[in-house]
Image (cartoon, rainbow over all chains, first blue to last red; front, side, top):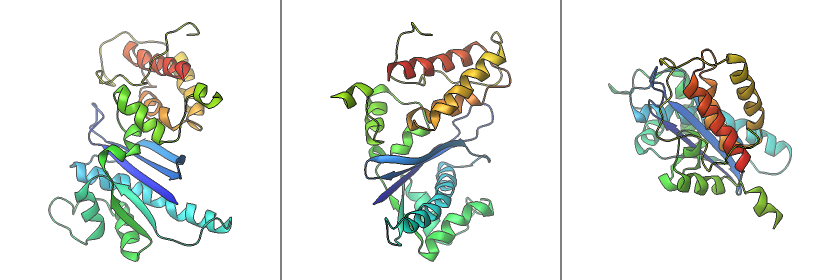
Length: 161
Length: 80
């Protein structure tokens, strides 16, 4: 079963106020595909930046799906994208264009298109379970260690035991 | 850096890096070498992806605080 998460840090950059977007794909407990990038456009709201992060993530499952089917490891099934912003999920599910979302660039609506066609499903995931958090912002030691474990990374010394 | 003290997180939560500041500039060559080596390490380690992406933004004109951030990642790598 493949799990995926996407998250972003709105206006994380001090100079140009662009956000950082990240996604992680996991099989079982192990991360196998990840990205942490500064978004190419300035987002006006945290909803918008999460939406952009999720649409960057949406390009990946199609390819992973084809690869796994080719390797006969998986049947064709709908993949779930974990997003922690309720408003971004609603934006992906429903065709609405009101004042705060009509300016979002066309390429980012790839996500909505895939969701409407039934290839992808956007699900809400709790903020504590959001492993992509690790790839978007500086964290305290405790949450950093916790999320690092969730990513499937172990200390070298632990592995020896 | 071989005798440095290891640290548990790779990015300081209290410091906001900026492109324009009035600190002393450091040699870009060493900075770029550190970033390049860390980028290679990113292929196998998702935990450092954010920190390395962050310092990669300041390769043009690195200053003291950028170099400190880069060295902090090296200290983190040493501890893991």
